[in-house]
Length: 346
Image 1 (cartoon, helix red, strand yellow):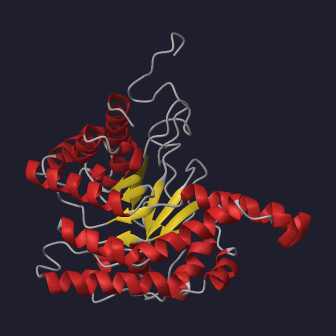
Image 2: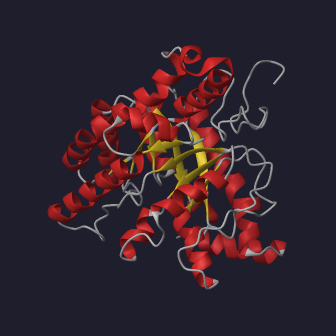
């Protein structure tokens, strides 16, 4: 705005500057990723400037429905989407006996998503109460998540990993799982050596290595561009946060994020959090530690929003998909922008 004031919804900013896209000219707040199913990802009515999160499990389910189980088709994401991130689909895997695609298929699919893919999560298994009511079950899921992360990262040989991951245009993101504060801390400590190796791998290549000496003039420029992109998008996920809506559950989420942030010094991605949780994290002074978050709840298919969606679809002649992208998602993005504008980020 001409007087220097800010529109709380980010309407006076470009797509890349809006809090919706996580790029503000004055302060860098968390990026909001809209989680889209496979049948939404190619739609031309995705709001311009909106980063999206794709679930690999959703794409496999769509291919399975079409008679090609295990396949991962690449969506034709419209040009107005500036950034893509990927969730392999741990909740689906946990409820269907495991992942239904190979790791080789997953990495080939990631490579085919193109340069807008900024980061992708390692496969994990969530630990919600309905999935893992006992501590021994949580431990088993944490251990499997840990093993899968090392498997895709390539083992403990960081020199070998460095060569392999220079071929990847995206950053890999590990997810800390658990349900109680103590469980999350335990898993964060278990993952710490992997996380440190990833950070060194990306950041040392970007800022600490004489790339010309290693690759020559031509290779140095390309390698530095890759490393800086990877370092910029590196983060650590915290999973099994969905459904924490009651005041005591929100307070527990704040304690979880605080505890993990003490073990893991890097910025965090919060899987599936609600606006009430963001407000609580801002009040706790934790926003500077949050790189991003995602939600699929904007689609109006839950709780009290369901009747509102029905009425609006009827009144405006919209399909449920059209409503989700043209009404619900912009509405949710404005709410997010308002929260980020009203709360201190550090």
